[in-house]
Image (cartoon, rainbow, N blue to C red; front, side):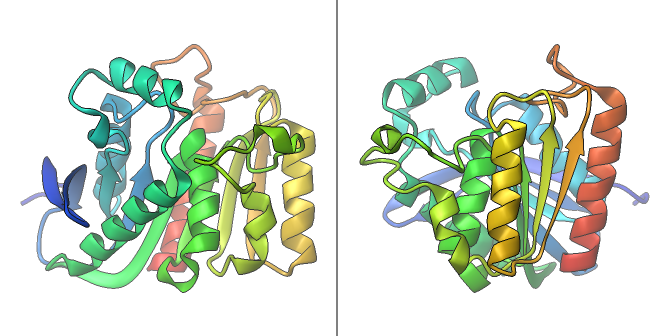
Length: 248
């Protein structure tokens, strides 16, 4: 066994009465590890999401990515994402339940310690903020990567599936939050990021925000035109340092 060896596979485990689907990556060996729930972006449970899990495992964390669209059936990430968009996204209550189940599964692993963080990208960043508020002390560290619609100025955009703007639940957030944002992103735009920070500061929350010039939405994703290598490398370094500080 070499340093950095990992195992990774698709797993099934129960959520309520359903057989949920997730991707799990773990460092090799018996050393006790903290865990991270990886919440995929709106484009779906895709290859890049699996790469994120493997990156975290390579750096010493058990990482699990729930397939938030598994209830819609089988299909390519693009097809599943299209179905999800057509339905207005997955219901917030359902996503929070999936995150909670994955956190519980991480804590049940033979090599687990009782520390679990969350990271989410795009819509997953919003879900991270939401889960941090809804699950309170069940989570130990939150990473929001350019999560849009945390702030909702036009309340007519709220729906039965997404009935509350996450920013309005901030008082319930207990875990420290790391935010990663591009200054050229339209959603969240710099003003929304600033207003989110103002709310966190006003409520006395533990957080750190990092904003990157020359970067827009999704700048970690190497397969997309938005990728920015220097900013992504620095952002990932900050994510890993944040987890090592707060998860061990």
